[in-house]
Image 1: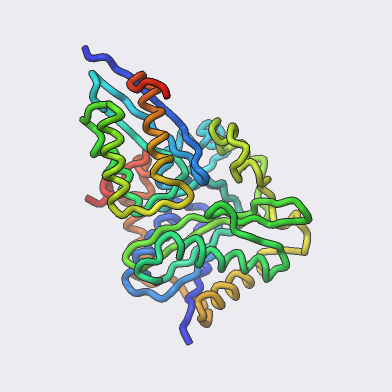
Image 2: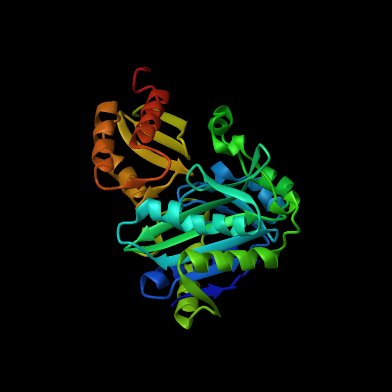
Length: 261
Length: 102
């Protein structure tokens, strides 16, 4: 049977390195590393998408006051706030050569949705990359995901709000006028909520177990615990030094090519 | 000194906000950026589009032709369409006073 490598590998107080490791993991899987599930956290960070400009998405003054790091990731999508109450998960694997967007957001994201179903929640994918939990006739957004693919390799990473400080979240992130004006969109249709507030005695260990089981099932694999390889750590360190630690990357939306010509 | 015009427009696609900021000097696109929480693959195509537009005439005729070429080159979007990007660009040009409002 195939195997799923599980990394409980985090650097909560250095989100710049954490995001550098994400890119290292994507490259590593592209170069033949086994399918990998990573579970991790940040203590206090805003992570913005590859096409976002920090000043447009983040209340920089508030972030500075709260000592919140602002880090840009290599995947598209929107800005998110992470504290230790937010579980981060990443699935990186080889897949069909032409699987594209559908393999990412239909197939791979379904693995995470299934994990919430295992925990007894009525969870669905909505609007490409949102994960929504329904209670009665009300729906709450508890997770968002973003991913990339290249040369038949895929990486999808996402959040899960378990017990995040939603007041800080709402103050540190800006909401655009266009989004507020458009009542049809999910961002205003679904209220963001912590999963723990929906009851069911949910905690980290239960969620982590469910996510591992769910992705093992989706990829038809046996899970095993592992550490990053020496090559992965060295690559992450290099990406941290040349790119993820730089304001040009995090705040000014410079492309990859600026850092690695 | 050539006249400087700036246009910014935020368009909300089904999924994702597309924000086009355009700076025009003497009728020529001097700077342009496409920012937001959309998804496009491969990602770096956005930067290629921006550099392709810089230095071109700031007219809808020219910009829409570049966009048509861009989106016919095998890109993948999630939750947005090429039309969403075209709306954002056209409105940004309108904001800059370079296209008559529809």
